[in-house]
Image (tube, rainbow, N blue to C red; front, side, top):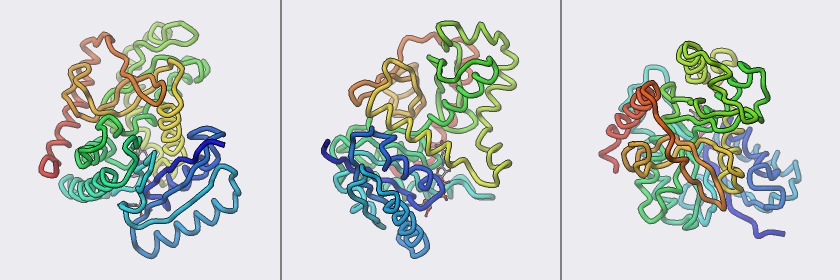
Length: 327
Ligand code: NAX
């Protein structure tokens, strides 16, 4: 039996938490041979803490062989002690009528505190995934608050956008989603993201040539993927939860266990790739091997793509400027 790893999940009593924890505990994220200890964080108030206890009772009742420990916390300094993986799901999403400055201030406080706590007590190799919105900027804040950890180990979730794009392409071409390779999403997890299928192939055939319809790309595909979150809320009355949890599992599994050369999308701090300024938390195409991700470099960026990348970059740099006083 492998040595257990410690996995922190914040916002553990929320709807994404409910769709996520059981899959981590069953081995879908880190492998069917990897025991896990769950260190769960919720806000330190009675309602969410009580709900968290209920979720933990259900986890117990699953009798997962790989779940060898489980703790409830109300303080990131204890929740993140020695963690190898941290999934930061809890945040304050934008509510109706909420000003941007208010949103950034609330999340600035949450992710500064969580970044500091990771810096102080987590494993030096902790892999961090931020799911809570605004995900890229929250990840950027946490990374900046953790100067003793590797900046590259802070990532933001673009995988839901990636998976949504893959499904739309599968539906358009009538092909299997599993056969789609070399798809990527550039930029921010927001409607400005740029899902790019110019390099994508299905069984070696070019997806761009198969679709051959720039009007569909610009006016149907990109808006459909970009506004998918809003469409789910409209249909379900609640925001995406199971698909978001699934994307978080995909992101962490691929990072930890590798992609066998397949491209996936991760939000990572730029090292200057494709002209994106250093440290901007940006969606890039990557492959993963031996617990490390590597950006797919050297792709040609045409004028349409550059325009899309510039737009999502501008949104992100504006968000990051809004939190500059915290850094
Ligand atoms: P819920 O409101 O159901 O749950 C969030 C939970 O987080 C609550 O239980 C709350 O008490 C807890 N929480 C809040 N602040 C916390 C803190 N400082 N420490 C610990 N726990 C805290 O939201 P849910 O539907 O689970 O969504 C969670 C986040 O994911 C939201 O910010 C949401 O916007 C974001 N999403 C991100 C996606 C992505 O692709 N990156 C897609 C789905 C989702 O919209």
